[in-house]
Image (cartoon, rainbow, N blue to C red; front, side, top):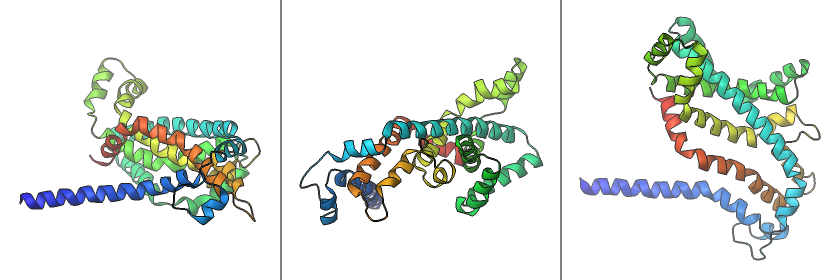
Length: 274
């Protein structure tokens, strides 16, 4: 019996190591090839650089117009995350505390939104916002709110099941309004879920190319993914600069994940398990 447990533990460890290596492999390719010349990348992609160079980074930094494009990405990502956290947590709170057939039906409809792929609604969505003259940053934020609401409400709704309604009743007796109960009592208790919603959506918004390219593809409003597109021309592809730019672009998200990782697993488990 002990041998079987040890063997099982060993297989779990080996599987974990293998999955970790597979997950890190793309990062290895990005980092290693970002320090190579263009010709060396095509000669040997997997090996470490023979002629180590850091010239790719300042050139990529300049061509990205990093400060402006990063500011655009930060504004869109930050505003979208704030709107999503506030709106979806309030919606989930209202749905979880109102025990009625209407609330259950609304939650069911929202949950179905997880099954609808973006590509299925992309053309009518952009067309509708174009007719409303909303192909701009506020329009993009509203689109992100609609697209991210299903997952966020699903996580918040699950987490709210573990918060007893007696807290609401006690606060009501003390004279707190519905909004005060939500803002000062419920929302702080949802911190792990909020962090999970922030991280999952921040990765999406920061790296998104398709939707911004359809909505805000105008000079001076480019995000980092839109600027990176210009490393790939019709007849040539500047892989050495693109990989350096890609590594620069993923650093902020990696830093965000490192600081918030301890909350992520708890937030997902709270939101998915009653």
